[in-house]
Image (cartoon, rainbow, N blue to C red; front, top):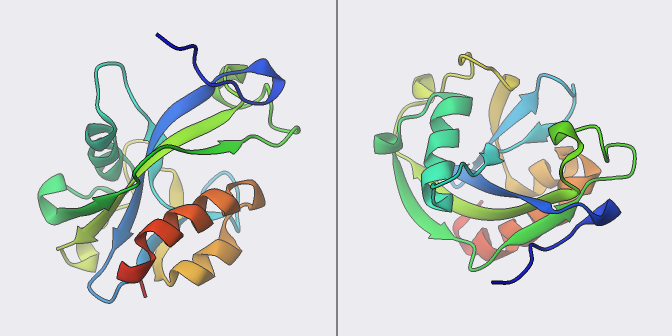
Length: 162
């Protein structure tokens, strides 16, 4: 068994699953973070023990934006893990200081429902508003330390996005 990959500060990466939720026009769901006004992102979250990345992605979809997995079609997934490092000012402050960044498996999902089926008013809300965005526009709205991850993910899924 290999040792876990280490990030900044000698801290391991947190395993995470992310969702690129696409509507029929090839636009991507983006939510503005409650805790960081002006920062937009796609649904993502940690992978629980015993959970596959795909299971985690579908769970996060429901937990963060109220979309039932029956309302999506899995189109693609990144072939490997994509990593980002936390910037120095966040090291030791997020995730109880246990991780130096995230390694993420991303899934491209086609949303089959209506916009009214997206409900960000969840039990533990993460977003205060949302919109459909072009991938290029979301790259400009994401916090800078996640920009390269989004660029890499959009490059993998790019031919399917607007």
